[in-house]
Image (cartoon, rainbow, N blue to C red):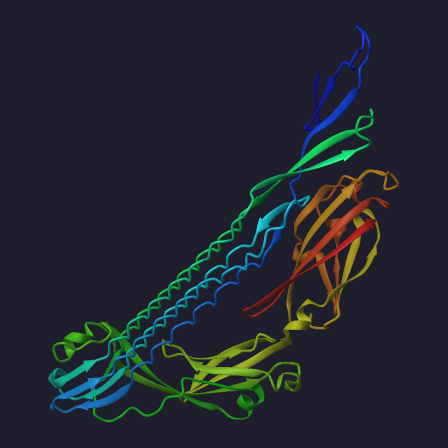
Length: 464
């Protein structure tokens, strides 16, 4: 008779005793069929991973140079150097296979081979050097031969080869276990079968990426023989320095054109896009502090004076401060008059105040701990949800949105550094505003000054 239960097969054999008569019960012999185990223990030592190859070196950029085209032949080599190839990854390490244990009561796994190392990245080619040419006669440019090509990219290294794992000397075996005394009814035996699986082969290392070719150098031409004076297109100083005296700025302006190689001697290699000198902008920038607050709080704040590509003078203030300023230009000096200034960190220091009244008299207050409300524009977005469920009920209260919109300016009153929001006058049913109503309130404040803005959300939940 066969019985199957949880993968274990048991069978019973009925034998007749020697000389037993018909109907006499003989001896029982119980044998348990094989039991399989699925845990594996390794033997031997796994091979180590191969070392990854080093990245190739980037090529050096070509030398930049300025020359004057006077009609005599000029040969220039401004080419960038080639990037070097990345190293190949090392082969994985051989495993130490050792000796496979015999007749153990667990499954075995042989040692695995080492993985190959990754190939190194190829180095980037160096960029070609730039060339600045002063000239009076455009035909003189044709006497200049220049090689400003970019360097070639280095190739990525090959990945190291993975190594095969160890094999098993014996793939399968069984171990018999018997209990009880042979020849007695309590004697039984069971066989457990085990296996050995070979070690895993190490993976091959990945190939390194090729580098990028260097770009050709760029040509700049100036239709004059006198060298351009040095330029100062931007300057960063403490704010106090720009209040005490103006800073001088200068910038050369260029037109972008194409077809650079056609201007030079045949065979020249440069970037197709070149720059032609157009004009020079010079000017001074200063700050006139007219803000209500003292400059002492902001004196060390960094300010960058700069000339834009369009030739306009401007100021870029640190993100740590919000500045409202208006420019005025006279006698080649641009003056920025500062009318308001606040610390950015103080713009979002709002906190809940108190709530007063019920129904149409309900109001909520917000306090400005940063004390900057006199200088900032402040708007509020209110989201009000209420629930008619009993808060003592164990289930989660269900809320209904009663208002979700901007609060009209006429319903917000500022008293110094305190805002009062007249919630009762919003288009909300009186039933939702009655005393004791369970409510969730979110008040999102948007504060701004000139081009700066920030948001802060205040949340509250309880009974009105």
